Image (cartoon, rainbow, N blue to C red; front, side, top):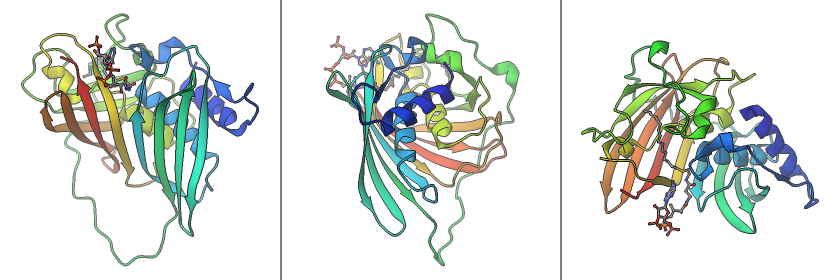
Length: 269
Ligand SMILES: CCCCCCCCCCCCCCCC(=O)SCCNC(=O)CCNC(=O)[C@H](O)C(C)(C)COP(=O)(O)OP(=O)(O)OC[C@H]1O[C@@H](n2cnc3c(N)ncnc32)[C@H](O)[C@@H]1OP(=O)(O)O
């Protein structure tokens, strides 16, 4: 099942009030270990919200907490609550609920442009080399998370997970294997989470790690060509006592900054 089909289901399920029809589920090939690929669950909740916010208001920021595992092939509901609607901005809360337990929470801020004399240009620039499709990772069943069947990653900086690497930087290019009709914020959300935590490459052997909280800020609404690659560059600011803090940038293929990402990862090495 393609990403767009799941987004459509999320939009439909969140409009329904009847408990018999307000749920959805996803197939196991969208999993990352025991749970939904985190980028998928955050994108589904974003899509559920998107339908309830006026389209003149774009997504400014999205804060996701992965409370517990969201399981495949099992119904869950997407509840959306508008917390406040002002003249320019809307604050929204959404939850994915499975078996009466909250599994994922997303809080988002949408807003429309306002007049301001302040203008600060982007202070960062893309350091990736152009995409070399020959360096894309192929899907290896059993060795890679199932959702890898749906995305292409072309790493350029950092190392493979569990390789005792000395660096905690990670970067490269990413896109969906199935070219979408358009690239929306939902696609950027999902792709951003497709990279393993930056610290996984420093593990000496395979062990679990879990994103616990994640903050994504959109510099601009994505104005991208379907099929174009997006750049990902992330660094680790700090890691100690089993929790790592990482920070990254999402770029268009032409080098425009699209979003900033930051997450806290629990390490079980
Ligand atoms: C260059 C590119 C190359 C790419 C090439 C392919 C790469 C291939 C590698 C990809 C690897 C991705 C790794 C990211 C994994 C997410 O990011 S998963 C997606 C989003 N995150 C989630 O769904 C997390 C949901 N949240 C939670 O489950 C809980 O809040 C937490 C994080 C486990 C809370 O921690 P806690 O309070 O210690 O939790 P508690 O309930 O007591 O459970 C702890 C147990 O959970 C286990 N556990 C924790 N995380 C996991 C896990 N992910 N799976 C299984 N067990 C886990 C622990 O080992 C521990 O086990 P025991 O010691 O009890 O045996």
